[in-house]
Structures are given as C-alpha cells and as structure tokens.
Image 1 (cartoon, rainbow, N blue to C red):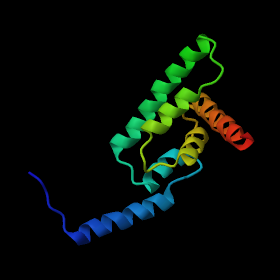
Image 2 (cartoon, rainbow, N blue to C red):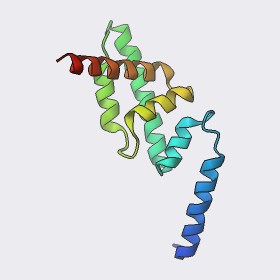
Image 3 (cartoon, helix red, strand yellow):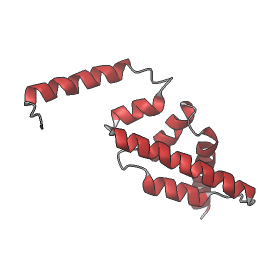
Length: 121
C-alpha cells in the first residue's frame, strides 16, 4: 500500500533534514555531509562508493602494468559522477573522510596536470 503524505508533513521532514545537516560533523564525515547537502539518494551514494571501489582496482592494475598517467580513470569518474556533485568538492570530501585516498590523490593530480597543460597552450 502506498502512503500519501500531505504537504505539511513533507515540509516538516525537509526542515528536520536541514536541522540534521547542521548537526553533522562535517570534519569527520565531509563526503556524507556533501551527499546530504546535494540531496543524493541512498542509491546515488552507493553508486559513487562502488565507482571508487572499481576505479581503485583499475588504478592498482594500471600501476602493476607501469602506467604513469591515469587520466582515463578521471574521465571515467567524471562521466559516472552524479550531476548533483561538484567534482572538486567531491574528491576533496572523499579524501578528507579517508575514503579511497590513494585513488582520490591520483585523480586530483590528473586534474592538476590537465589544468597546467591547458594553461600552457
């Protein structure tokens, strides 16, 4: 059976959501706070974390093969990241929360390299 909620109930939930968001320890859980701020669903959060897990494995395989540049990983990440999440802020929040730190550092270096190359041309 599907429950129908009135507008007042939904507004109260939204208000409570905003209050809870203010209570979140952004320093301890910056990625989760970012997910809340950008109204991600549980599925979207799981997809980002699964994407990171997949790319972490791919990164490790590339390292074993002697790859030095990992721009394809960044392209994959950007292509699969939910539109609601800003790239730079997402990577920094994942790193700050110690989620996939090695991968995130590689992706941030790839961004820096691309930015430097675009400035020099």
